[in-house]
Length: 129
Image (cartoon, rainbow, N blue to C red; front, side, top):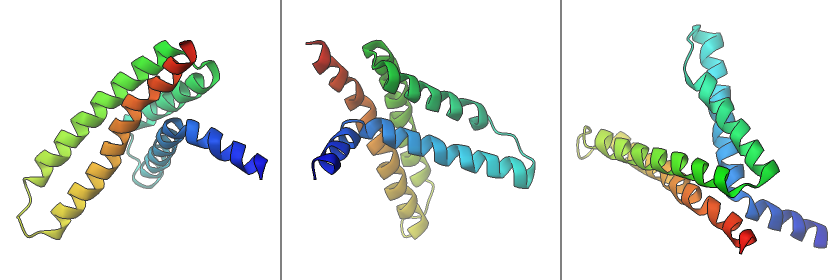
């Protein structure tokens, strides 16, 4: 029982890093699929592995500076994407269910990303105090 509790506590503590890692892995797999099936190179083939590398470095070093830089970049990127989702939602007709699906999915993914991005450095600040 104690082992499962400690594993759950550790996973809960690093939930933002786990979330961003899963998002990056999903993007990398999708990027590989597009390269193989359509012979189409996308820039996400470069920056998603770099984000995954930054997450691994942050997990290893637990640096407050890396956490703040990473937090600001991912947080403002998530806010930008929320605004892009809202802009794209306005292009749909009011009764179109695809627009509602886009809005709910986009706000869920990027809203959670923004919350996790801005919450990430706080756990490292607690260690310094």
